[in-house]
Every structure is written in structure tokens, then in C-alpha cells.
Image 1: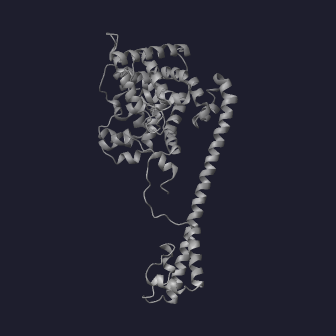
Image 2: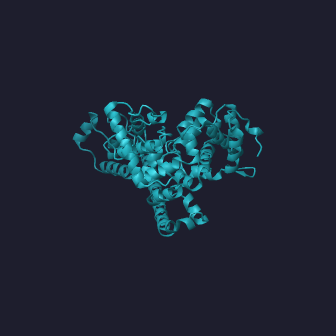
Image 3: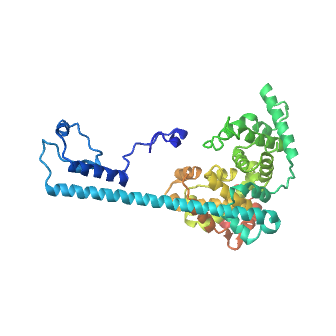
Length: 440
């Protein structure tokens, strides 16, 4: 790879030096050049250059076809023939590699074209058939199957908005009101350095400008679009600030910025705020963002029931290692996997989450554990915690969603919502529980 390639300059990287393999054309040219030289005896001056060791072959590969220096014994006919044969084999091998690489690129292009064609066809179906008849079609088997395959980016925001709903009845005008309040409070903070209201709640203080600014700088840092000076910095700041004024009882909690950022990438500003506020108002999200310990324990307990049901070996390994769900689930649930998974994968998780609700968040967690089960079984407590906190970046989408699809959200004949209800009843006011002794 050439170091001056635009991609490397863009990301400030310098490629490692490699002994690049020559393609068949280069080797063939060297071979023909060598054969041409053999047909034309070198002049006296050329002999002189070789004797003075100034002659350089076209490549190190071509050395096997070169005659030896005059001060060494000449090659025998058998040795020269063997070298020529070796060189021919090199040319053939290079041609084979070149053909294999061309086939690989052709396959990738074919797959990409097929994927783009599939997205284009799905987009037409969503725009012409499903969205105009949303209420009648959203629960049909055909739509659910199409939904599972991933929403086309052009309709993703619209579908998310419809699926999340607006139970809070927030309007664009209401968003502008809370945004104005946020800007006024920030202006006051910048002038006085403190809150004007002496009775401001802890949540209000936690939702200060400094904390939001700090978290925004950590939001999808590799994209460079939400950081200061980026095109979406002010937009994200506005949505988060408006929410802290809309829900001062919740305030700003770290992790919210990732959820708001994903919505901003798919929706207009006011619509992103409406979806954000309604999404955080769901029972699961509210339990985590308000740090309701009893409710969080309920979710962890329900998760472990299905964990043991689907992955008994790994469940036993986690138990023996004293590794509890809060060590990895909190981070996953707080950001709806947008921090833990590559952005394109996270959006696909969001697609089905909007279809199936909170159950799918925990099903995705089990899918991740299933995908890496064999790896995790070889690890101890510290390495498991580190691995699940920072998942690999090269996750293959088909493998992950295949593992998620294989997860059965049934315990006996009880579904997620039924198990969850039992957990809420049995866990109320408790901190420790023996999951084996629970009866359904």
C-alpha cells in the first residue's frame, strides 16, 4: 500500500512496510526482459559493470535467472533449466493469486450489489405499502419478517418514530419551549458560574452544562461529528439540554448522549427529541436511568432465567466466577447497544427493539453471549468482564443476528413478560435471591 494514499492521510496512519508480492504481469515483464537480455549478448561495458558489481537486476525475484558474476563458476545447463522452471512456477503462482483476488473482489461487488438491490426493493415496499397503511400492516407476518432483515436507512427514522409512539403528546412547539429554557439556564450558568435557583435538585445539578459537554465529547468519538466544531455538536447539545428541562426529576445521566445521537442521525431535531423523551419513558429505560435498584434487579433476575435456559454451560461458568449481569448489562442497556456495538449493527438492533420492545434488548444480550460462548468459557472473571465491556469491532452481522434468532425467550411455558412480572413481585424490597427456588 502506498503511504501517500488519501485514506491513510485522512486517518493519520502510516502503513507497515511489507514485502509486497508482485503480480503476474510484473513478474512476466521481468522474465521477458531477462530473456531479451539473454538473446542479446551484453556489451563490453555491461560486462565491466557486472564485474564492478554495479549491475542491479530488475528484482530480487529475477536473481535466479541471472548469470553468475565473472569471478564465479558459470551455471550448469541443468541448474539454469531448474532456475528457469522455478521462475515459471513463480509466474504461475502470481497469476493464480491475481485470479483469486479478482474473484474475491467480484464476489464482494456481487454481494454489495445484491444488498443494495434488496434495500432499494424494501424501501419501495415500506414507502408505498407499509407506511401509508401503518396501523393495519405493522403487526402482519410479512412486515415483521421484513422488519427483522433491517430497515432501509431512508425510512428508519420514520418507522422508529411510529413504533416508539408519542404517548407523552410532545409537540414541536413544546420542544422549542424547553430548548429556550435550557439556553437561558446555560446563559445564566456561564455568567454566574452557578444555578440561580438555590433549591435546584440534585438531578438539575447533574444535568449541568459541564456534564453534558463532557459526555458529548465522548459520543461516537471516531465519527468526529458530535464533538465541538462538528456538524451535530450543537444539535445533540440542544436535545439533551431540552430534556433536562423537560424531566428535571431524571436530569442528565451518562449514556443518554448515545441514544440521542443515534436518533439525531435518523430524525430531524424536534422529532429526535420527541422520540428520545418517549423512549426514555419506557419502563425498562426509566428503571435504569432513574437507577431504580429494585426494578433493575428484576430485569437482571429475569435475564438470568433465560440465560440459564439458553446457555446452561456458560451460565454455570459465570456463576462459578461470581460474574453478575450488572457488570455488562448496565452498559448495554443504558445506551441500547449503541456504544457497545458498531453503529450499523446497533441500528439494526434498534430496528427490532422498536418492533419487539424491551424483551429484544435482553435477547440481544443473550445472542452476544451465545456468539462468544466458547471464547468466554475459557476466560476468568477479569477477562470476561473486560471482553464484554469492550466487544470486538469485527462482529459479523449475519453471525450475530443468527445467534439472536436462535435464542428462545421461553422458560417452561412462560414468556418474558410473565417471568418479569413474577420477578417484580418476588424481588420487591429484596437484594439477594436464589433464582433456582423461584416458582412460576
